Length: 634
Image (cartoon, rainbow, N blue to C red; front, side, top):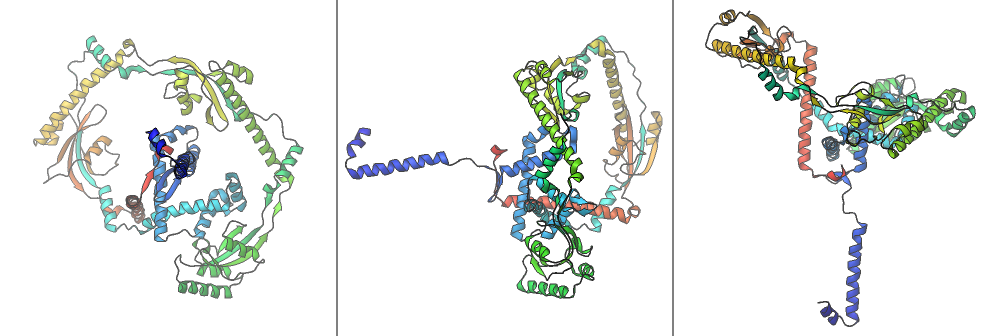
């Protein structure tokens, strides 16, 4: 075939055609080397991609929150489970569906809401007021600008716009509240008696019975698997800096980071906001401006607070007479910022159009930026430098421990000698944990990991908390084993007798129940069996006067029909049985419900109904949206 092609390829037109074909094939072939064929998003909701970075940021936030809340009990491995990863991604998809619905329906978060939310965060408050210095320090620690953080808050608030609107519009009627209360406080009239414990005719247990029961229930008589480990611990709390920072070092750091101790210029501002709707018509905008001009024309420092209380649409500040506290550049939007810093002390601005509407500003005071003197921050610098020195020392020692134990996987001795750290040993402990470090889930997991338990190697560096880590190796291993029969013989014999008693009690209860259902009077049956009949009128759920198993069964039984009681035999979970009669069922006495209790229940029901409505809305949004999940990125 190649020869045939070669025979036909003569002349310059053929050569040109061949060259074009080769070039095209080369370009298309090379494109595959420069074009990635894999999707880099974690999920795609419509045209919006949830990026791997966004997903990782959400996971890190949840890990940090769980670590803070759970402390030493925090288990980071939980976040590696596929089910947990998908659960987090589902929540992000729900947020994106709600954000897209906001855009479709013209819903947005007002700048005032973002500002009020940030100002209400406790970490940014000092003496109950928003503290710009704390806010700025937080932004610096997170490596974020004010705009970035505001966008995060705006997104979180935006995801709640629809759910909040659903909750606010949820109506719970008086009938629904009454029906629930009537059921929750339902009253039932009961009679019952507890059967006496049966006496066994045969209390002898043979060796054969003991042996047979022991063989059949060996799992009940196991000593758990146990280990003890040797370990080297590095604890930052026990480390001390090699030296105290000198004044020269402190002053050098102060000069290098002097901007940290400079308070920015701040302005004490009040405002009156005349809201302009998001989709306002020209007539609405004109009316809002006219109202703002009218207020600005009569506003003075003396009456500004009163005017704000009467006319401002900013619900967060109107109760304080429009007071926004001390503000600095970058905290508010650009138009508000420029107007605020263009005013002189005591001056009131004309209405300016901001994203929320028309704002009238009153600059009440100015606080110039100034630096704290060295002596005032000296103690803070010492603490920071000392902490940094301890952190460096911890990282150095922990790093050397990790390297040394990795290079010598069969012993802790070289690392202990090189770092002058003691080798400690735990008592035996099981997979359920022990005392001290052996109570830490991460310590337990490492001790029973294959690398330590089976292969006999040193573990990797195990992080138990901030500046706290260990490396361990197996000391002793005691395999799980059945306890000898001689040690558990008495327990086995008791179990056999207890089972006989339970079977006899069940048989007696069934016989008594059959007599009651045939129509024998309950008092007569109780007397014949040597039991005492008890009566409870208008029993309610959660009542402590009746045994819990009895009360639980009483509220499961169907209503009596035609005045005939409903009967049941009840296992009391202590080896005994009771015979129960349900005589009457009444709804709850709603006259005993206080208005406060009723209103509290109404709010709880509204919240539950709102959550269900939110779930239904998300189901509808999911059904309409094209959602793709890229599990390879999880």
